[in-house]
Length: 282
Image 1: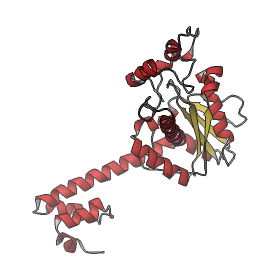
Image 2: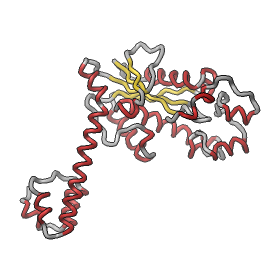
Image 3: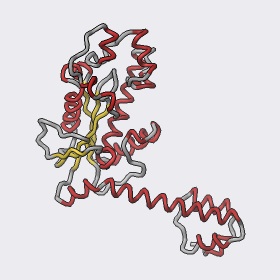
Image 4: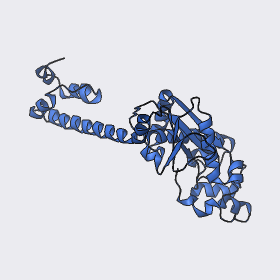
């Protein structure tokens, strides 16, 4: 390794390329030497490196905290812990989709978070990495007809159960976002806001969200003019306008009030949509 004196002979641009852009390990004493350097750019570089180090430490702490539920279960001897989450509760069209993911013990993935907190590009990138790294992952789907028959709450649970059943490795324990899955023999725990608190559930939310988005993009090709590739079936002004102008499609949920209104159908009494769906996000 070059001495600090040798490194300081490099230009600030060269130092930045090596230690900031390239993220090489910072030699002991380099930051202090940059602080004392007569070049303003060198002092600025030291500040930027320290900021990067702080961000890295904070991210490491966040990821450790995100594994607290998993660490407890691993310590109790549960090797394969599956996170389970669903997306697509609120939309007026399309299926509800669940993801199930078993992460390796101690798994940390930079930027892993609730899918709602991520932009589309980051979600897609993380989804591919999770699929590569996971011990097992799967999705479960409940179609529009099942949503209308069962109601969206129970259809979501059905999609979750299907995702768990499709895992190639049998989980020893389930961490589920906000609920527990009936008819499932695996030990489980529901965690309110689990997609923000558990790495496994966050990973499942990313897998489910990217899978459902891809489905809605395909449905946009099948049913042009409704904007499904953009709004993914959610209750946006553009979606309402297309519903009014073009009418309801087979993929629209007839148990949801806005769709029923377009079709001239009476509201369903005590509809889950009427009661709660406008307050839900997924």
